[in-house]
Length: 187
Image 1 (cartoon, helix red, strand yellow):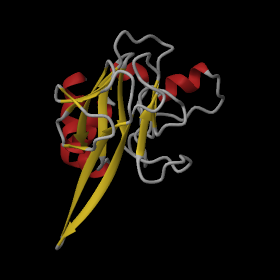
Image 2 (cartoon, rainbow, N blue to C red):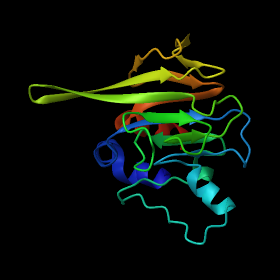
Image 3 (cartoon, rainbow, N blue to C red):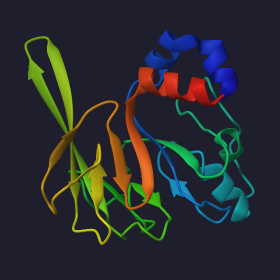
């Protein structure tokens, strides 16, 4: 990851990995904790634990950015907010402890289906605006945005830089330029 940040620079990185991400940390993480998603630092570590023979190499120039868990240390993760093609809920990105979520976070304070994010695209002339609506799905511990607890089943717009808590798991909602900045600080 360090190589990708240093080699590409902020503009190239933002152009290559345009999108929205959650950059977070699982408290008191150990090697059995994992986060899975389209792009994740826990994914390769999980594949190694399960003993899969074909583990993809790190590929900074490929279509997907693959980050190994040891790069950001155990407990930290970055995942793109992207819909899995095999997930049942077509209209939203699901977040929870169950493995069938688009973003699965294995932690005791995360409910099986903890929250969801709906992506809304609004075209205003030549400009397209993307908004993200975060909704707590009646989780046990709750979802927090910038220290304010969300009401159950009440959609809330999240913006780049917002701090989000799913149970005890803390995240920052970022776009590609902000992700570059945050990862550069960590490396």
